[in-house]
Amino acid sequence: MLLDYDRLGWLRGALLAFTGLVAAFLLLPVVFIVLLSFGSSRWLAFPPPGWTLKWYEELFAEPAWLEAALTSARIATMATVLAVVIGLMASFALVRGKFRGRDAVRGLLLTPMVLPVVVFAIAIYAFFLRIGLGGTTAGFVIAHTVLALPFAIIPISAALEGFDKSIEDAAIVCGASPFEAKLRVTLPSIKIGIFSAAIFAFLASWDEVVVAIFMASPTLQTLPVKIWGSLRQDLSPVIAAASSLLVLLTLSLMIVTALIRRKLST
Amino acid sequence: MSGNLPHRPPVLRKPVVRTRRGLGGALPALIIVSLFFVVPVVALLLRSVTEPTPGLQNYAILFGDGTYARVFFNTFLVASIVTAVTVMVAFPVAWTLAIMPPALGSIVFGIIILSMWTNLLTRTYAWMVLLQRTGVINRTLMDIGLISEPLPLINNLTGVTIGMVYIMLPFMILPLVGTLRAIDPMTLRAAALCGASPLDAFRRILLPLSLPGIAAGGLMVFVMSLGYFVTPTLLGGTSNMMLAGMIAQMIQSLLNWGLGSAAAFILLVVTMALYALQLRLVGTQRVTGGV
Image (cartoon, rainbow over all chains, first blue to last red):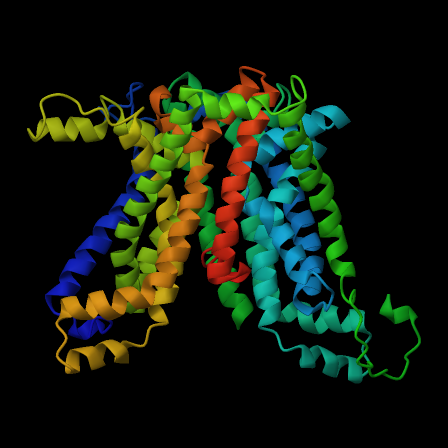
């Protein structure tokens, strides 16, 4: 009875009301920040005394914001490509390999996701200082690839596990080389997993704050570092404007994801 | 590549048992993780027993000083409160999502994903503004006459709890929906037929059957909360600093690498022990919580 939506009685209303409240709670900061970015009060009074676009003007007037966004996009794109390619190869090994210690390898490759980022951040910071990669784009890309790798491996492995290997074998029996069979039969079948991997890997790098705070140099700042720096000074509405653009980006990402998933699955 | 090769008749693989078959593909990942994850972390941990002089004095300081004991206690306190609140809020939501009509449910799922994918600093910034002394929440409560003085909602345990629960809820709700959907509704119908009251059916069937999901999700939230840096730093006060914030401060402001890496080692050991426990509960596949 408790799992029959139509036979819950009064409990259904209570559950729906509670879920509605939690949904509102989850939505509140996102909607609030967008409204605030158009408010005219520098002191973030709400509801705002008037509406304005001046925080967006200030945002675009300062080239450091755009520069930071471009830096983030560049690093996240490179880290995504690396994590997806390396993660794809690793997934084949983890799902199909018959080597000893496979579970240990899987555990090791997923560890960067579990270890508190702050531990990795100071470790890689010290290490890069020593080998001369501190504050460089290459350093950022490597560190973010390590962090993004688990997010690539998990969806690709899951997709690969759901794929019947005998289809690939059939292609080989029909004369395809093992490489060709993987490229033309297996990869198209697990494309949704690869696509999810790319989205998660991108977000893992794009949204990464802690490693970036330690690694950033005055000349190389990612967007989260720029926001972090501004936040520690004051709660300027310019941050609200920047944040609203990030919300817009998230929304577009969700829509694109939904569209592509629909297209890929047909 | 294959185009250049002459077509060969297919060779059927012989069932040779080799212990390294298929390892090759994992090599790039293994190399990058070993070189840029394992080596730096091990090197860091070595500093905890070599700086400033070889020995265990850093650990002696961390375990001997009341200030650090407070930070450890506070870290576990915050993680426990956040986990408890998250589980209690997430369960009814996951329950509803598991059985509600998909059309309505997809709206709620959309909101959860939107919140989860929105930039972490954006969300935290929003809570900083919402919770401050002159923020909307205090203003509204004062306007409707519930309070006469602004409540201290930020730079304290309340602020950290609200901000952290907000971040953790999706990680608890999404896997729990899976757990609850896997429960056969027939078992609960049978209970009702046999005369069980809704409360009995909940207590003796629904709750026990969803316990593995609750335990796995709760453990994940607890582990993530233990090592969280951003939200506690921005929404918490100096009096309730957490371990991750303390580590960052030791390195960044005090440049005390010995003490900082010793604290990092303690955080690592606790996290890995709980991770191992979680693996035993659910296996690696489910650890990410439904993503």
